[in-house]
Image 1 (cartoon, rainbow, N blue to C red):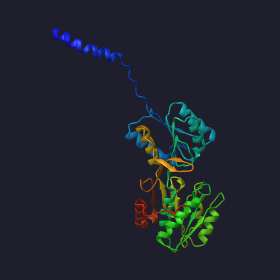
Image 2 (image 1 turned 180 degrees about the vertical axis):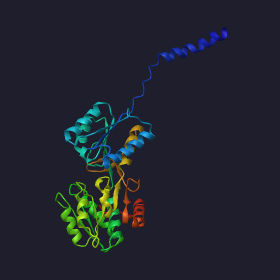
Image 3 (image 1 turned 90 degrees about the vertical axis):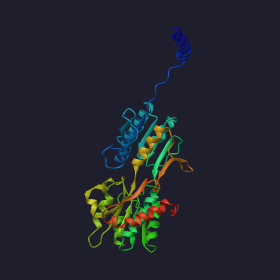
Image 4 (image 1 turned 90 degrees about the horizontal axis):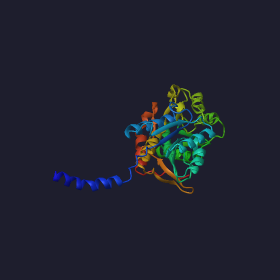
Length: 338
C-alpha cells in the first residue's frame, strides 16, 4: 500500500500539469484545388496531361478528394474568376490553374487573396509574389525541332510556321533555325508568322518553295494539320513536327502520314510538383525572369520537363535528337536570345 501511495504522489503532479496544458489542435487538412480548362478530364490535351500528375501525386502522397478538389470552367472569364474565388473562400490554400486562359482571372483573384498560393501551368505572364508560373522551355523545343527537321529533310529546305498569338514565336523561330543549321549549316530555314486565321497560305507557299519538313506551334485549330495534308503528295511530301499536348488533334489517325515528331511539354510533371510542394510546404523554383519578375519554374531537357517525341519516319533520327538533347543538358549549346 505504501509503495502505491508513493507512486500516486509521484504521478499526481504530472497528471495535473498535463491537464493544465492547452488542448492540441487537430491537424488542419491539406486543401489543394485544380482548376481545369474547358473540357476537363478527357480532352486528350492539357487537362488530361495535368490529370496524370494529379493522380500520381494523390497515389504517392496518399491524398483523397478531401485534400484535392477538381473543378472545370465553362471557358468564360466570369466563370473562371467565380470558380477561383469560390475555391479561395472555401479554404483551399493552393489553387492550381491549367492554361493561359486563366491568366487574367488568376491575376485578379490572387490580388484579392494575397496569403493564398496560386500556380498557373503553361503561362508565364503574371508578376505577383503569390503566383508561381510553371512553364516550359519552348526555345529548347524549337531547337530540337530544327535538328529533327534538318535531319529528315531531303531538299535541304525546312520551315517554321509560328502562331502570331504567342509573343515567343519569333524567338522560337530563331531557335528552330539554329537547331537546323547545327545539323546542316547551309540548309535553307524559313520563318513565317502569318497574321491570318489559318496557316494554309503560308504552308502552301513554303511547300511550293521546296520545303519538305516544317515545325509549327500553331494551336488555334486543326487547320495546321489539314493544310499540311492538303499539299503533301507522294512525289512531293511535306512532313510535320508539332507540339503536344497543345495540338491535341495530332493524335488523330490522319496525322500518321505526315507527322514525324512533336515537341512535348510534360504538364504532368508541373501538376505533380505543384501538389508535392504544397504538401511539403516548399516553394517551386525561383525567379524565372526579371523586369517584370516572374516566379516559378521553367521546365527543360535538364529535368526532362520537355523533350522531342518521335513517330513514324522521325524514329530514324533518334540518335540526332539524343545527341542534341545531351548537349543541351550539359549546357554546351547556348540558344541565342531573341
